[in-house]
Length: 315
Image 1 (cartoon, rainbow, N blue to C red):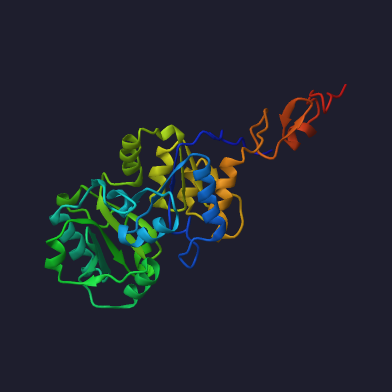
Image 2: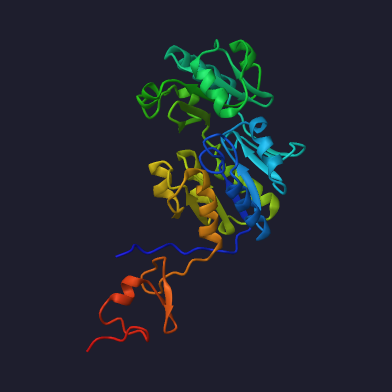
């Protein structure tokens, strides 16, 4: 028996879209199908927002490639800015002590460090394989500077980078010093563990932006694939996980996009929420059809004693 499907709200006013694993394909590009899906949302009157853990400087090219995108949430919610960064609504930084301790602890464990400051991405480490991986992902090279240089800057977040096995072996709270209880960590990649202020999230940033735009979370739809997208899934009235997403993302989203090639999963997710699929009036399953004035799925139609006009009850 199909599980009841959640109700789909189609009067969306805001759509927040994750980048890596959602809007972007494996080559870090926007597929034609996904670009068209963004245009579909915009044509429906939806304010489209890019929301990513990436730094603004590595997100801006995607905003430029999507005419009509006016706002960008970057650094896991650490910054909310207009697409050209001429207007900054919000910035949230780690304390200098927290940055110092997170960097020192990560380096002691053998991880490579990248820190996100207003001006860009910085590392205190020599170039290595982790840097090659990061550069291929972000499309930009971190600038090598001294630890003191990083500590002189306002830092949104710090990333530990390493081999997947080493990252996976880390405890749930790898840094427990009382002085940085205000810092949270989240896995965003098999090779990354990210640290940021405990109050920073895509959800908190989207709420600030929604307030600015006089929009409501109830009419928002969010699209993502990772653990770091869960807060915005829980914030929005409707959320859609990519079918290849993390187990937590799949569990927390109100909907999951239909299976298919990852490069076009976002396009299928947009079709799912905009095409208003028929929902069974009895069990809530998708793939329903109208029979005798009532919308029913195949299972409910086939049940003996259905009693609808198209499938009379058996004597």
